[in-house]
Image (cartoon, rainbow, N blue to C red; front, side, top):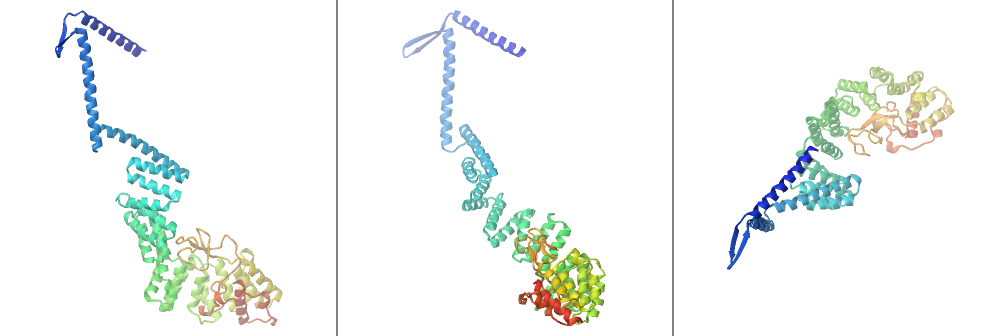
Length: 501
């Protein structure tokens, strides 16, 4: 209120001052006489003041016009002027608006609109480091892979955006299925940004799929060094890679280096079942049976597994059934209540023709966790004890439709594998296989290494999976007398294995 009153009073004061000044000027005598081309112009004092004001106004306008013409000329030749800055800011405002619209279109999934707005922003802003990435992403969403690749390649020319360009082309090659090129680009991207976790994981996965175990171990070491991988996980995965390098130990021409790699893999991760099995075989090949026993015991303590029992049997392949039962006692007492311990013990006792003890070893497995292996063992026990053919056929019939039991299952996609591998054959994930019961029930298809592996004796005498023929329960039984022998039990196990396969 007071401020408004002050402004009103000031306005009236100015008007009054101008009025009084005008009256004084009008009342003054004399003036200014101007002669132009022989013509005299006489101006009063008041007219002189007005003429002076008009002259000053026209002069200001004239000089401004001259300045405008000079600015236009300088703008035309490329100099920076106020005019160019004005138009530049106007164009920049439009460019950022187009940039924002393109980002919103990207978030909304409108690829064509995003591409159109990105192209407009590219024309207005003249900032390739900012707009090329947006153009590439919009082109990818719109399905224009060629334009996206061109935009990513433009990013390669700038050192600041080179990583973004390499990563973008790498992802395009992955989408196209060109894993070899993608792996090379991932190596370049990791060299530019060693701490980038996504690039580390992508490169590690691609190297594992390409069986580049040495390169994968280097990438894994980089993950540990940059802090993107805990040390305990690093040890486990480094053991997986070392194990993958040593897989050749299963071949007849396995070198000493491969045997040492298997032992090194077990040292890095003693609870890794495949590594323990390979390391034990390496020690057996060297004649170091005590070391093999120690490795198997350590792994069995972590998780009992049929492969470990199979390798433990290979230590003394020609021993008698009774001697094998006695030798296995040191292994089975580690985890006496585990399901695998009970199954292995029952197998050994069947070979030794101690069928009542074999039944006691199985316990409640056939009711609590009835899989093909447990049910087949039960059929062998019944036949060994002289049960009727109908009882034996009943157990074998159950085994035909029973789940297989624990298997190598991928934790990422739940794909079931016949044997362990470092990379899932279905989803390509690295180090995701676990020995467990599948969530999806399956019909039993056990292999010779998992169904009665100890009854058949040496590994090379086991029935190959490729030669298995499906038979009916009638083919398994015969009309022999109730007295059963160890050979009968072995025959039952082999035939049951054929049925389960």
